Image 1 (cartoon, each protein chain N blue to C red):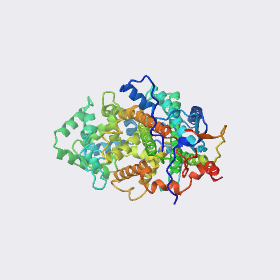
Image 2 (image 1 turned 45 degrees about the vertical axis):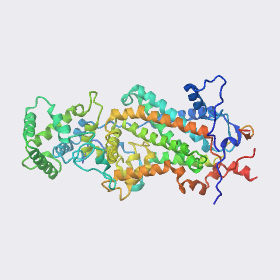
Image 3 (image 1 turned 60 degrees about the horizontal axis):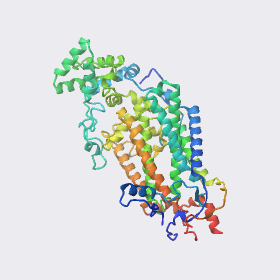
Image 4 (image 1 turned 180 degrees about the horizontal axis):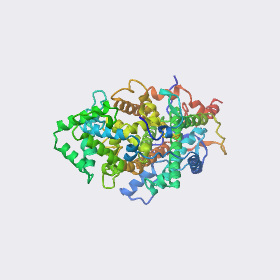
Amino acid sequence: MTATTVKAPASPQETAGSWTVILRRRIVGLVPPGQALPDRQPAYMQSWIYVFGMATLASLGVVILSGIALAMGGTVWWHTSALGHYVNSVHLWSVEIFFVVLVVHLWGKFWMAAWRGKRGLTWMTGMFAFLAAVGTAFTGYLTTTNFESQWIAAEAKDGLNSIGIGGLFNPLNSPRMLLWHVILLPLVIGVIVLWHIVLVRRHGIVPPIGAKEPKK
Amino acid sequence: MEYAVSMAEGAGRYLGDGILHISIANVIIILVGVGLFVAALLVPFPKGHGDAKGGGKK
Amino acid sequence: MRAKVATPDSHDFPTRPYDLVKEGAIAFGVILVLALALAAIFSSPDEKAISFKAWAAATPNDVIVTAVSELAETSGSAGYGAPYNTNSQGQTLGPLALQRWGGVTVPIDSANDLVIGPLGSVKGDTALSGALAQWKAATADQQSAWATAYADALDAAGGDPAAVADGEYGPVPELGTAFLTLAQSGGLEQLLAGGFYGGDQTKALLLLSDGTYLEDQAVARSLGGDQWGMINSTGNNPGQPWLAPVSFWYQIEPFKSSENADAIIFGMMGLLVLVVILLPFIPGLRAIPEKIPVYRLVWRNYYRTQDK
């Protein structure tokens, strides 16, 4: 059994039927007590492979911060300012780091069969986050307003048009791609990543393959 | 066609031809990823302070 | 085969001290410093966008050939199909005409939107106004006959308008030259950009892609589809290597030379992604990690204590 039946402790003054109370109990009950920010972890977690989830999250943080700094300067700032170009470089390299550690995290979770014990949704949300990240990186390249963005847009239109979505998602429409890159897709990633982390904390880290329930 | 500016200006360094054509930069990124994965599996994890205690639900 | 053991609750196992917040802070610090350092050392690519002025300066004949191909409706965009027009069925994925089914959602009339329209904005050129008037007064068949004849003649002359043999071209040579002049003036960008602020590059990029200059520049930088271009970047910068599983298929037959390569590869990748997403529920595939014991390395300390 995994911890899917966690109940938040009722406080004595709760009003039955209160929507607020229902929502609070839902939220508190998402994760077992103390597991949202745990200060202990299962003893079988003794491998460097476990740091790559946190590394992915940390590099996402650097990606977002450098992206915010770039956004404040506007779309063409970085073509004309040395500082802007440096911030752009930080944004690019944090993205490269992000994908490297993300892929290591993904390989690790695959070889641990980390979806065992009703953790299928955790794997799936992780994959969704990966796909959303790929889309965000792609729209980022479309947003660079330079030769590369021209060529990538011209090439990508054929792929997207070939499956009939080039109108809905027109890579040649640069302002539209900019909004996808800085608002829509980051929002999607944020929500999925949060969901992914809640699921990880809710179910706990998957026990080793073949592990039996410890004697109590 | 002839160009006033050399087109190879912005071309980076690449390995191989045809199906094995790949930029040095991408090779390095991919090798770093593979290397980190192998290292994560093989490098011993430092023993934490404090002994393991029994199950959390006890 | 290993007997199926239900996965126990992770919260029942012995624990040891762990500082999640500290791990996060250290990870953030390390990656921030790494990103700052890599950015300082390797910078990032920024090759100037190709303006029409630059295109006209580098390959004036390509600009004229492209403009004429728009008028003759033989250009890439003119014969594209959805979402720009209905002049082709577009790519298909087996029996699925996904491209056509997407509909004409970004309507583009290549001759009028990319060439005649912008030329009509030029003021004070009487020769050009005369040529435009002659073009507009002609029937569609006549326009097509002129433009096709001139396009063929240009082709025979190796793309050099000065070397074209005499023929029945109507106003097309005039229009081509005027279009080159407009591109050289630097004013074409503004006339092709969509919206008040001019950000939408759909028309500009379709025109640029209809020429050979953009692609030649890209291929010279290993950015072509069959050069693993999808994962590459300009200069010595890393690109998007995580797209390698998509880019790969463009390197091999039968995809490489297929008319429907994009549709087939996108369709295949969609299926593949679905398989990976649903991996935990696919018998056989989900058992791979249990058959190839990489996990023994991850949990070697655990198994060592269990074996005792």
